[in-house]
Image 1 (cartoon, helix red, strand yellow):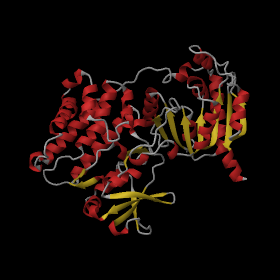
Image 2 (cartoon, rainbow, N blue to C red):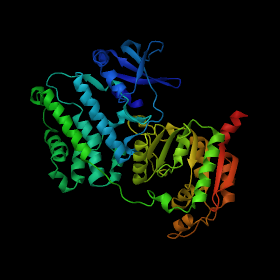
Image 3 (spheres, rainbow, N blue to C red):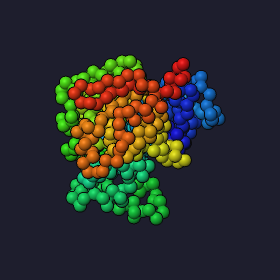
Image 4 (cartoon, helix red, strand yellow):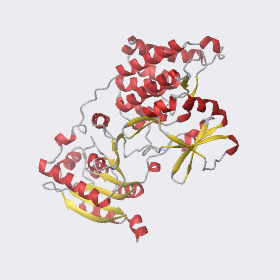
Length: 461
């Protein structure tokens, strides 16, 4: 991740398709303690820290400052907090606190409390920054406390008490949601919750009070180990008490209300499975996945599948189902396809855009095109060009204008979509994709297509 340039302890770099981490000499003492104390082994055994190998056959870009080169296990897809549902962010917060508690038992402490250091892979919630630990000095407070509150407690409280969509504030505030803003947005009743009063409202007031004052002597901030452990326990109980039950939306209950008979639905599942078998992808993105029923046709075949949806309730249901079933190859994420995740941070390089995290072998675009074309006025050419950028294979569903779902979209607006026809759809997409197969889904009038990117077809020939 390019954002590692901010860390004097080391940085990430790539060689070919492999990622490496340089450990700088300034971090040598802490790294040796991480390994020697048994903390690294303990966290890896608990699937809380991404494992790595030490290597000596890779040239460093900064050999004068190099102590070690690590080869970390690769994460299949890097996601960001504004793409997570409530329970994902909550799980990431609890994993961070668990890691901190174990670190304290080994004489170390997390010096970073960033949500961006947590990733979801193989059904696990992992810390990916091996250099986030430092040796704990006697009486030292948790230096990541403010960052943890901004990255985890503040957005979770806002999602639970104000509006679940406020996790999108991460797209504006790259270092977490400011506590003074959080305090002003939370309802009055949260001031009667001791944990939120302490860690958010009074914490914000303290920040404002000391913002223009000289730094206090370190002796004033000394805290014993027992008190430090107590604070972590208090944060943990605060996070656990936060909940979001979700609201009922048409998308969270889409499959119960969709225009499919049981026969049609089963036929669509069979077709998707057959099209996947012909394409044989290793990676799949399901755009508009809802609660992931069709995503699981891919993940159940051993394919790493990222399933995106715009609806927080649908993503929440999908994620909780994946946790319950211990699914290791399915990653539900929140995404507005008409405004996808942008490149962020310094020089727009610290966090990658959605497009930069592609391309992917295959994209599923099921019951999606009519929403893009009619609800969002996107011409077929723009839609096809987007898919051409992100995938080799495309399984896409065309929903005709006669379909009840399309008619519902047109009830509140004038029908200006004269080009919304199967013929025009095929003509536009065939400019960019080779149409490999198509079949009507029984009793629906909907057409399912398997297409291949023409760039890939040309290179293969």
